[in-house]
Length: 459
Image (cartoon, rainbow, N blue to C red; front, side, top):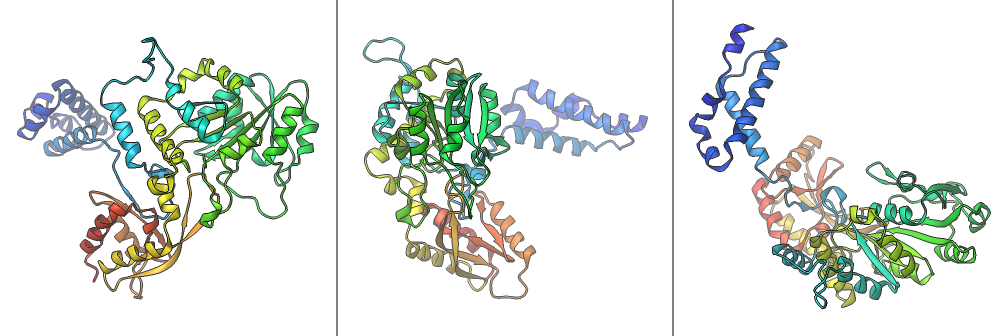
């Protein structure tokens, strides 16, 4: 063991190696010393447990790899060919060109984020977004925070702390990533009172549960699952009406932030923010990066008196939105205000894309690869906690078709090759084939796909 320790080089010897020349010019000396010291200490611990000392070259390579990893931004652009339009793991909604331009402009230098141009005094960042949201949704007031979970947490913290909020047992859901509505409510200090059963809840269930400690009735859209069969759910109209009758607050977490009717596109109806406001709901909560098609945000619209109270709560500062996403959200909402959402917001371009156009693109992709590919019928998913179970017809490029030799390992090998490209391409594997769906791919990315398929040389 003693001999193994002696094999370890000094920090000075490592850093004086010629392979560190460019690194010495690009990184602070203290950083290189710190990483080298930790790597040598790790080698000592390995020796203490009976292991061998790494060679000098191994130590050099390990240190350089760690420095390279630290010095590289790990977030990378990818091409989503999975057919899941709102893919949470891939960043949900891609942004429109106008949205990206607005975010860049707000980030480039200083801006009037909280500066009143008329008075020269401090202002509110909400003034940049509230009028647009009110115009689109018909609400009296609005505010924006970091994300929808934060919006719900803030709203309940400000209005329902140490009081009871009634919710259907079938809507006491997990919203993804292990976050559950009951847990969010518990953090707010509100007491959750579940009524009804998993599959059936009636407005009478809410009414019978009202006690002097009740402050509100909460409706939660089941954004990531669907109950079928014998079911019943009290409508938001019924809930809002009962809340007004009992002098309570009606809360509606619609989740997806849908502002357009989804039915004309062959999808099931998705609750719309405007409809909830029109139904008389006091507060509606929704996301900015789902069906709204903008950057991540949590949005609250509704009763002015209640929203004014929420704005003053201490938690509002902890969950406030930054200038970049605020600018991007405003630009996205302007597409709806101008009636151009279908033409300019990427997710709505994808949803509304005709199958004939998808097939045209799929055939172009297929021509790049030859006999080992075919264009087949398939389905695209909305995803991202929106339209659970909702699919759209599409055309898929299936790689590995037509031969008995093609296997799961073949599909996985092709998938890995595409994933390891400079711009990774992500598809989905099913029935021993790799499928690529043009619907979830931006048209300007087609040539990247074609070049990648040609490089596979499977003809």
